[in-house]
Length: 553
Image (cartoon, rainbow, N blue to C red; front, side, top):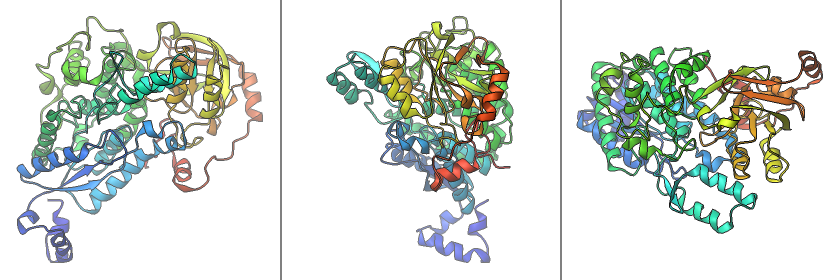
């Protein structure tokens, strides 16, 4: 056992004395040491129930003959962090979570791990850590929130942000906003639409690192406690069979994840996280493949914010495995991939039927023949930009309009709420990337303000920051290279014509090469916005600004 390094032999007598200080018995010292990474805290709604999940995992590990030992991982609530300096800290926590978990797991020589994440950066951070540490590992998340109910309709957090925009436009009363405020988020759990947290939890199933239902069983269902017990038992089986994360997270598994991402219409943030996770697993995932996979993958789900169904309904319809089974009818999945069940993808999804063709469209009747995410390129984004195609109104698939340029999120919001943005405009928000922000803030407030003002189907928004999974409309983020490193987005001027062509996968500014070269000659790098503390260190360490990743060489 790996843990023998801290438990066995005369040289480890001091180590054993510390285990005795923890109350360990001689019987426990002979069993595998299983670390349970608990992301429980009392500030993130998606994490407030994780203590119960962790207790269930502990029981499962103990029942299967292991010794469960809990240690923590941090997590940020992106909703609470939104729209102020706190959002600069969201993405950067992903690497912090990965690094700190690696430190704890290797310092204490755990034989196996069960990761218990839930929200946006917590899931990819722990997947990155699992790939690095590479001991048998199973994931079980805290689960999604139930949808809210306002005025007889289901709703979620994105509706709450848009309600604020509608209030600013005089389209909603303070009482109406208060009604949303009280009822949009009715239970604990990750926010109820196909936002980043639920996207990544669903893709954890697809990658093979989580059991069936990990991404969809609601947080408040007792079924999730049973799932957690099974995760604890399953990790002991993996330990016995020596199945490790890098045996599971192969190149083929990441292709599966990208394919199902397209079918589900996941958050654009998955395009930041999947390459970073793949890198840790020794797989170089080139986003060029995204459009190739999208071209042949039908979009089968329109979950909020793209539509009016929620994760609880996806669960009732058969969950992620049912979506995968639909895709497999077209031979789009690598079914031979190994998973934490000890079985292949093909074995796992066999017989998982689609129980509701209105929630999961059959492959013969998709929402679209192409996937939910598109990577755009052009003279404005030579290294790429990402859009959630499935959440874009048909009339905005091709759009051309004058640039309205802002050098931070706050200025853009003030202009939107002040009525300075009109139909046809293209709002450009720059210097919000990983280095320039620093921290690559999400732009849910600006997109929600645009939607709330009734401009969601007439105004595009482009940024070198990123978009929340809750964003909808022609919101194009992750523009790379970012402005802070001299990307073309830094050279755009007020009134320049910008063309978005999603079917053609292009994003261009209609300025001649000569004029862009002249502007580049005049461009000067900006002074860093943050010069001390963790954010400053992060900005100096980022080695792949297109996905905000601190990639270890």
